[in-house]
Length: 313
Image (tube, rainbow, N blue to C red; front, side):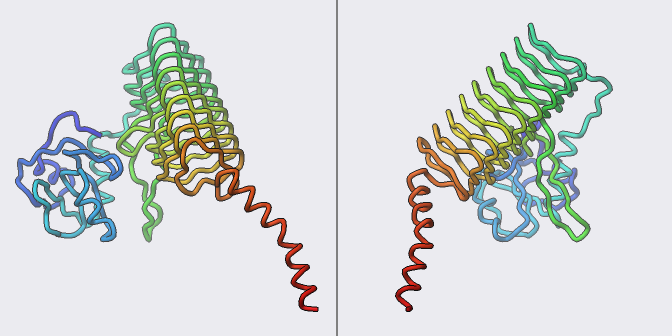
């Protein structure tokens, strides 16, 4: 998330009421999570295990819960609760804006685009030309929809990330200030849910087709010309490269990459990154050849056990 204008370190420290290390006029351009952070951004870290990763990242400002040596050319914001203060910054720069009508006055709708009855189109949404948005679709604030996109009934674009901190008082959500971006010629089936990024974009690239009842988590990027069948669940921060096919009821864990032209068969459980150009199935998912050998070996177990019994006699 980039700020509308550059801010100073002193100004950011005042917003969240914390101490800073660095010059007061040090420029701050935005805020992001560690996996998408860029020069000029703030990143937060609240566990010693991840201090080095944050301090050595592209981030220019580190919101941290301990005084440490500040890397050259960077600045620190010292907070007793970086998670809380990161939320404060999200609320400051991307506050929730109620909408008093079904299609926001700040939304931009392209030529020949049809919005069916009972849709909700939020603030600052942009929808391109020649799109069809079927009834009961909800598109939250700041989403970007390309040209020739069709979204079927009941789908929701832009709900908050499923991202919580476990505290003694309960689960504390990390506020979502990112967007959903849908490129040209994408089809989205009925009752799909696509969460917005925490600070960046959840992106569906050109030509991808998504069936009904698919869940796509925050900050996930789905490549061009992918096919995703019904009841697939994709966690946050996943990268799915171009021309990947994913059949129904596949579950994909967070933070992994699926290589281009991979095929993942129905009911697979994907717990690690998968190489492109291969076919996979099973739990945990593996390539067909390896999986079939594994199944063949399992089928031999009763025979082997019987042989062991005979040897014992």
